[in-house]
Image (tube, rainbow, N blue to C red; front, side):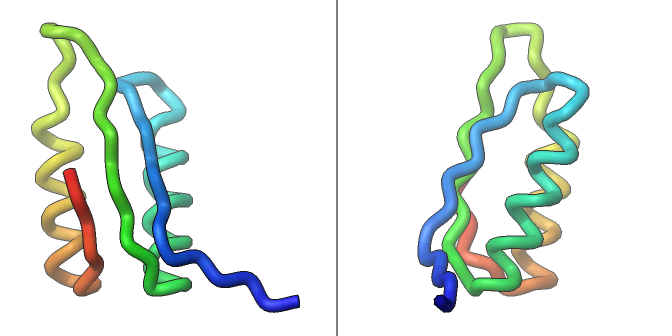
Length: 68
């Protein structure tokens, strides 16, 4: 059976395992040419600026359909 993914939803916080989940989702989105929607979960002290920059850069390089 072939697997086909069209849309992937990634919800991450600023916890220690978020980068692992992020990398797995990016790898799958790239492999299956799937759209990736990222939901950033945090509070007013959470700083996702590095994550957002990384994702935008990745999107440009890999021509990935990414929604933040």
